[in-house]
Length: 502
Image (cartoon, rainbow, N blue to C red; front, side, top):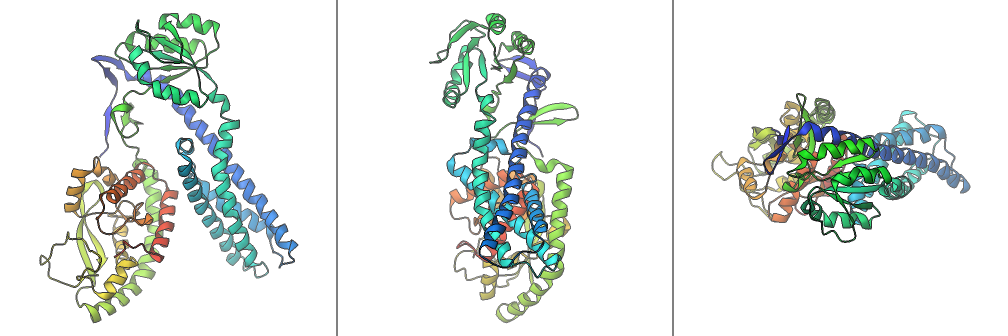
């Protein structure tokens, strides 16, 4: 169920150009961008590990200066702390380059979220080591002090390091001299982009056109026809050529690419197809052919599917053995006294690929025979259909516990977009473009929207849209660490439920 289209040939104004030509030009740059981001991520990770390690010894000196109880096995805890951070940062910095594109608040939010997750795993590793070694000589207060003080340090470095790396390491990339090559109309359409990047320090030396018209780009010199490009490259050191494909590109794009290779220029081909779509185009390869996809799908990888399934089973199996049985006993006790009827409530929901399945829940409403009420009617605040203990279950999500059965059966995952009734799906897909993208993955017991308090009745269209956008983002940016973050957030939502939980 993938959304992609073949571009073995690109058609622009009835002119075809084999994609292999452009793909080979682009391939080097795509890899370079990935290596650049991976390099930044590695430096970021090494810096954080060094900071946390050094801060441990600083914290120990501060602690000892107050004549508090000494810590036993200091090297053990220092190494365990950085091991926890190493696990927390593994894979969590893959989208490092996107950090530069966010505004101030977006960067702050991302930095705090990363710090929360990193500190949580450090705490888990440190206290796991404490109890595993049965170390009664170490002050637990010191360990708490170290972990709490590590949080602002991690948040600060998560926020500051990208800017510092870009300033001192990436500055040479920004100042590379670039030439723009394309027809005058294509160049004029990039006016705002050129202006924005010029203000950020990018060096555009001028433009060459593939037609006889002069572009109206203020502040950027026109260097003439692309026929004069070789003489210019011979006399001027140029680092980068930015090519703008058009209907006549078959006659000039290979020539310009060869000149770029001859004079050691990096080649960038502007993707003018992206303007037709709301989402970013992603390169995929199927059976040796290259395609653009409208949706990145990390869970198309069998390895990622295996990792996610193992994560599901690691949590759902203990929950089924140790949480579900006592919950069944207590729920049945209150149901018998307040609303006699079956223990479980089952309902048809829409899951992976639009296929329906039966979802399991503890019954939280007064029992009626099937067909006597509209099951698509959502619960509202003060709903009379809900009995007293049922309201308590719904508020603290106890009624969702049986869904671990669905996880075990493979119909659901621990984390994913929440499954809706087919009737609700039909309504949403009419109002929200590409709604069914959320069905590219298994539905979840919890999801990216629910862990942020966006749950309950569909009363506000803007909140519904926000839910769906978060689901889209989850499908395209899944990592196992994102699942861990959502689970931890969900625990907070269960303990401190939002007002919409009824």
